[in-house]
Length: 440
Ligand code: 9MR
Image (cartoon, rainbow, N blue to C red):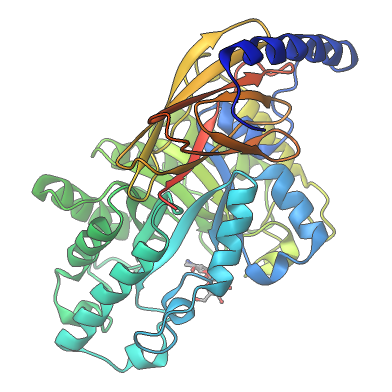
């Protein structure tokens, strides 16, 4: 789709009205809530999954991925051993494949992870002291710069606290470079990608009473007080391998949120996938305004790192499990985001930031305008939830995917604000998400 003048917009709008009224005749009114991603988006959240690059050639896998999820986390492809296998030789092929799949399908990307004691390449494992500290900051700078504008959230530091009752930091070569290694990592990530949201991510920080949870809470509190650039906490929430969903999980989410950070459920899987536990996790996230979304750690049970526990939402043959129905029903209940407010979590960008705001709303369609700051040459990706469909655009060079749900808009010299019209097609509550802003 190309740039349209206001006059042509009216014409296309009229065609859209006709199409929408025809569609209403053959579909039920409530289109909302037929997929995890669309239902989560209606609540201003995402629903995501870990993705393995080598499964993107499996069409049964990508069919579910593209239908159900609007956020992805590379399962292994952005880890240190994958992105810097030899010191100062960076390798982004597999990660880039996941990012481009995500962008083409309007999915936001969580980067995982920049600094971690595990999955270090051999050269890093054998390092210590100042050399390791410098290697860590160089790694963060290079990788966060490479993905700038494409990664909405980074797990900057992963799993830095010890299990058990000590509340101490985990011993590791990184920890031995000095206790300030975590804040140094956050500052390096912030410098490399000021627009990404920067998260601390860990497991076994779900139970509010656990010493590990309390220790991470105190670190985040301290970082906020001292101005260390942290935006979010990721609770991995692996309720597998003997860890159970705790009844005070919502307290944990809301307590972190009260520190002024967003919370994300980043690696959810639950042994035997009980519908009740999945429902509870979903309701807990929906109950906490700063809980931005849920990512499950794989699509089908056969994709899981713990496949023996069958902990995911789809069977090995791709069938929806009872836990899937429970999550979808939970996402669809309760109050939707107020009509007219586009969901823009978070402003995304590389050297640019794109912020959506609501425009005029009619019975069958609505307008959205997006303002880009920080660059005069830009490319912004926005997406709407099917059956909504973008029909008209203005003030940019547009390309739309075939279903009309993912719009890539490039600057055309007419300024920093562009707009588009979305036909509701029966879903009157969902609003667009801004997926990325980049200067390329
Ligand atoms: O699922 C990942 C698996 O394929 C890898 O072999 C493993 C290696 O450490 O990492 C798994 O993902 C982990 C994630 O990166 C951090 N939290 C725990 C996850 C499950 O082990």
